[in-house]
Length: 438
Image 1 (cartoon, one colour):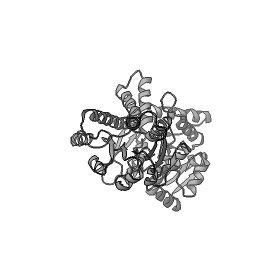
Image 2: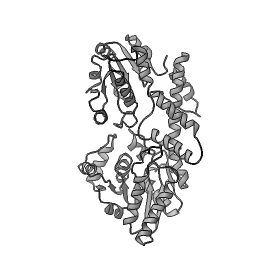
Image 3: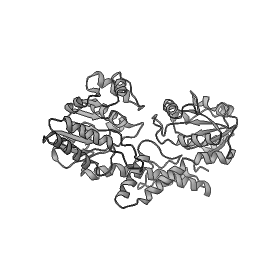
Image 4: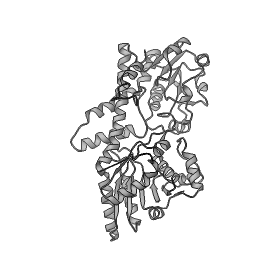
């Protein structure tokens, strides 16, 4: 099948690469010539395990191509996936200008039937706006051409996006005509050979499903963070509590790990957008408002622990940070808790030396030379007054504690991801403070 993917960012590139891996003829469009030049050279503008190999393999086979030519991209694919950004507007709503621009471009150049697929995360009602934009542009051309609009939200975890696409736990298709549904089933059939995981529903329900899923996961994270803070006050251990409630099959263990708050390109933006959609329809989502407030507060939790040990003024103090990305296996620093932590430490006069296995380049782009960057975990520790664990990279989970202690000026570890066993660390002589651990 000939498929066009509009937008070669995180979602678009993973979608295009994985579809080409199963034999489809995929053309990816992006209006950024530098990004397209990189991709044509076989270079990947984002870090995602396994993606580079798939892109290079399918590009070499001729199944995956990249272009900046809008007319070429519209002519290529019967199916047009819109996977452009929907950044938050000033009021928290999703900015749909790029989605609607893509829809208009399709309408200006199409000459036959197209299935226009909203792959971007968009508010309920976006498919109607896309349909209206295409209708208006076709009317301006004075032509009447058939098309379908489908909602097909992505459910990709950064750091495991390729695996999630190749082995989906569900495929949501929102459509109202059988021709489009048949085409979408054909596209995804190779990804679900064991049993059908496709959930076909109306368009608006599909759009809401994506926001509802991310809002639920964000809620679990903020709930556990608040319980962890309470556990510290009560003298309980949140790790034992996590096991106790996670063993209940109605609850499960996923997304019950307390820490320094969620970040990334999805949860913060989608919670805000869903709250804004509710407000526009005369409702307040009180639970999600609290989720957002709790997350903002949790990003300061490590700083509060630093202040409790070293005082409000941190001039002359140096802190080592392990982890900059908002989560492991990605270089994404959008809404990363590390940015809040670093900013607060610098405001109080401290210096910071950080290490991240893949996000240092992105961190330098955002932070410049406001902090120091180490080339190894141990390199960040030299002369630091404390180690702050911010991202749960596997590389950090079993360090040489004797060497860590020797490099630090003071044997203090403040663990924002509960990576270490408290008794083990204390046996090495560390002053250890984690999130909700006794």
